[in-house]
Amino acid sequence: MFTGVHHTALITRDLESTTRFWRDALGLPLTTQIDRDGLRHWFFQLTEHDAIAFFEFAQEIPDGIASKRPGVTPTDGRHFDHLALGVDSRDGLDALGARLAEHGVEVRGPVDHGVCHSIYFEDPNGISLEACCPQ
Image 1 (cartoon, helix red, strand yellow):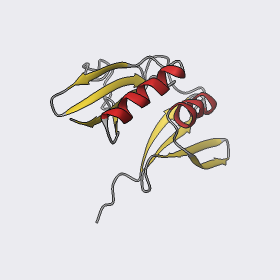
Image 2 (cartoon, helix red, strand yellow):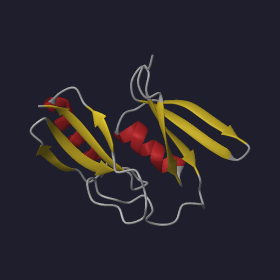
Image 3 (cartoon, rainbow, N blue to C red):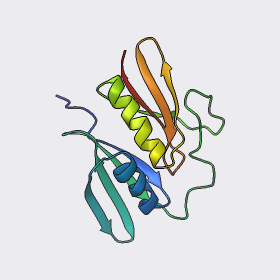
């Protein structure tokens, strides 16, 4: 019945910097832009069936609400830890890490978890991200 996660909807204050990160640094195509009645909701294609989407709420996000390192206990009542994106190989993971660094993104890792290798980084909104590949 299910085909996967159609999209994950996250929040941003600034769709332009978010677009520079998700489209330019990560290489995800910007496929859909819904701009109506003052609401902007944009989609970046992850796979044939899956996307990462953002709602822009320019003034409604308190400072620091999104910033949290993966695996660290939250202190603000949130239910979200991090988003992990699958990468096909260790070479692909290393290439992604290099691409992110070229765009000025701080990359932590790679970390060998025994079941996968991972790198960790944040988007411009402070959203904790992981990219991982099979062992």
